[in-house]
Structure formats: C-alpha cells, structure tokens
Image (cartoon, rainbow, N blue to C red; front, side, top):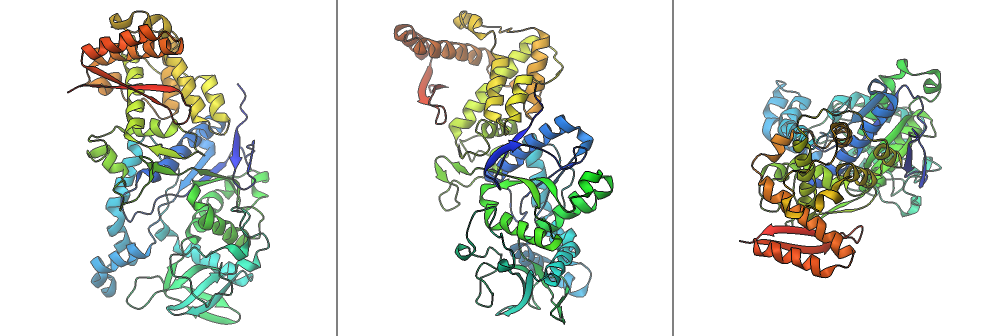
Amino acid sequence: MSHTLKLTNTLTREKAVFQPIDPNNVRMYVCGPTVYDYAHIGNARPVIVFDVLYRLLRHLYGEEHVTYARNITDVDDKINARALRDFGAKIADGSMSLNEAIRAVTGKTESQFQADVKALGCLEPTHQPRATDNIPQMIEIIQRLLTQGHAYVAKGSEGHEVLFATASMADYGQLSKRRLEDQQAGARVAVEAHKMNPGDFVLWKQSADTEPGWAADFAFEGQSFAIYGRPGWHIECSAMSNRYLWEEIKDRLSPQGKARPHEFDIHGGGLDLIFPHHENEIAQSCCAYDTDVMASVWMHNGFVQVEGRKMSKSDGNFVTIHELLETNKFGGRKWPGEVLRLAMLKTHYREPIDFSVKRLEEAENLLTRWYRMLDEMGSIEPSIPDTKMLEKLLNDLDTVGAIDELYTLFTSDEAGALELGASALGWNFYDKEHAAIALASARFLGLMQSTPDEWLRGKNDLQVMVVEALIAKRLELLKAKNFAEADRIRNELAEKGIQLKDGKDKETGERVTTWEVKR
C-alpha cells in the first residue's frame, strides 16, 4: 500500500501530496462550535470529516506525533448578554468574573456538544481551547498588528475599535480569490463609515459600561488606548492555533519545523468559513508574525441541506444533533450516532449532502446487515484495516470509495448466499480472519463500535435478514433484465405484507430499494 496522502488544498485549488512541516509533529486546527445553543446537523459534518482525517494522520505518523486542536467559541455578543442578564450583579460586585459567568451560561451547551460528538463516534481532539481562556493571546496579536502597521484604532458610534487594515496586505483575498474592493467586512458588529476600507474588520470592539468585556491596553501612533471591550470573531482562531500548534509545541519541533515559526499543517472547517472567517485568520496571523503562510493546507467540507432544502428554523427543517439522537423530531424516531456518521461519510467531504430520512434508513439498514453478519461469526476481535480501504482514504479522504471497499469486505461471498433466497437464515460469508479485517476497517472509520448483540437487540432479525436477501437478489435480476423473476419476488414479499419502493441514488444514479411493513 502506498502511504502517500493527497489532499485538496482550497488555497491552491489543487490536489497535492501532503508534506508535513515536521513529520514527527503533524498539526491540525479545525474551527469548532459556538456554544450559544445546541449544535445542529450541519455542525456535525466537519466534526466527522476531520475526525476521519485525524484517525488517518495518526495511522500514518503515529498517535503521539499528531496534534489536533478544535476550538470552543464562547465569545459572542449573545453569550455575553445572557451572562450579564443572569449574573450581572455578581459580575458587578466582583464575586464572579466574566469568564466564570460565561462558563456558567455555556456549560450545558458545551457538555451537550461533547456528548453529541462522542455519540457520533469521534475521537477527542488533543486540545479543545475556549476563546475566553485566550483573551491575553488575542490582545498580544492585536498589538503586534498595530505596531507593524496592519491595524489602526478608530472611533465609531459605539466607541473605539481596533480594525485590521486590509489594504496593508498585498495578497489579501488569496483564499477566497475575491478582490479587495468587492469584499464586505465580516465581524460580529455592524459595519460603519469610520473604517478606512469597507473590507476592514474588527479585531477589538469597545463595550459600553453596561456590557460585558475585558480590559485591554493598546499603543497606536504614540498614543495609549485603554479599551474595555471584547474581541472580534476571527482573532480567536489566530490566537488559539498559534498557542497550541506553535507556542506550546515549538520546543518539540525538529529544526525543519522550528525554521517555519507560527505555521502549521492543516486548517479545516466548513465551506461557509472560507470568507470572511478563514480569509481574515490568514490576514491576522501572516501579518502579525510576518509569515507567508498560516497553514500549509486548507480543507473545507461542503454544505448540508435537509430534505432538499437549506436548513432553517423558519422552514421547520432545523434539527440539532441532540434531537436526532434523543427525540422523535426527525422521521418520527431516534437515530443511533453510527447511522448519522455513516450517512455523512457516504458523500465525499467536498460535496453537498442532502440529509434525509431515506438516507438515514439506508445507512441503518447497511449497518444492521453488517452487524448481523458479525453476529453469525461469533466472537470477533478486530485485526488490521483493509489496505484497499486505506488507499481510498489516502486519495483526498475518499470516504465514498472507502465505504465501497467496506461493502465489498462484508459481501465478498454474497452471490452464493443469495441463491438461498428466503431460506438464507444464517449468512456465514467468510472466515474469522476475514471478519476481523472487516471489523477493523469499519472501526477505523469510526463505525461499528457496538457489539452485534447491542445493535441487534430488539430488531426482528429473521424477517430483516430474509427481506434484505430477497431485495438484493431482485436488484441483481433487474440488472440482468430478468423482469419476470424480479416481479415474482416483489409479489411474494407483498403477499407477506412487505412493500417495496424503488428509487435512484442521487449521487450514483443506481437503483435503490427500501421496504416497509404495510400497516
């Protein structure tokens, strides 16, 4: 197997061989959630995508040689306002700091996020820093930008602001490929006319006496500015990536790594973050530390829509990970985390996903089939992942191809078994060595973490097994244009109260068949 990893770099718009700055210290940063509210299903996609990449990097370079940081955003005007509402008196009398108040406000939502992503089968990152724990680091970067002429202090209608001067960076817009004159600022606060350029964005914003904030002192053009306020949106990721992927690791880096200060290997997130968030991260970090590069590779996952529409609370199709896992809101039932994960991984990370009940049903049926096959084998311990599956992942994290290989591992002898038709009561497709590879491969993708007994408990195993065998046989008959025999199977199932529904896979165009028991 080739160990060459190729990744598509948003910065270059090309797929290229991944070459870490220091192979003994591979570093990745991914933008995490804002813990104002529960994470929605769109937030789950980057968590799952970059968890697979994290697993792959650990496999290639060793667990102890990969550092993965995913931040927790708890600096937000809505969070600050709630902290003031709930704990304003304690903040005022000094019995509670602003950070402590924010922690109290966001503690439940952060805990729920951690429980949700664990249920999705994700490994815990090396670091999960909170923005509120890195305010001094943000202030330090802002002062660097002021000193080096990449930022300025201006007074707007709500007080003083420190703004990044986009015109000071010759190649600003390199990630999004947008011209400076076409860009709009992307800060948490309103855009006002006091900016030197409409594209300039907020680094630090003054808070009113009645608003939460942190004390900060800045020097600009020979003057001192004490600005009680809060950071803009983008500065937190520049501060935290630099702290956890450079400052706290630099002593362990090789000479080659030390020769490229303040740089790291991979920065990930959703497609919606390319502009303005990631564009502005690059501007801040490169200008503050006088580097040409912030991260060597930029990776972005595609959008998630729900049942064919953009997710929106007003449209009623907004759904959180917690609701999918624990309530009947979506499809009238709860969904296991492994089902959500497989449903995501069946689409390449750079492509959009239409998240639907049908997609979840198909993923669950597939997992149930695989668990049942393992159950027939008895006690199985995973061995090593399949090399063909790993090769798919090495090609720009091709999870679609990897799952195809996984499907092959679990169905290598299926043709013979299907000849048994409705009498296929005990599928025993391969020996235990083969089964151990299949299980290891599934677990490498973060799937099949349960035991067959746990997964199959409460399911009508016999009926599902027979129905799926007949459906698979019917699909083969349809491909062979043996319509009479295919219709015979459909009619036979109908007589037993099993209704089939044919459709097409939106991505492959292949026929797919789902089934249900007629009421």
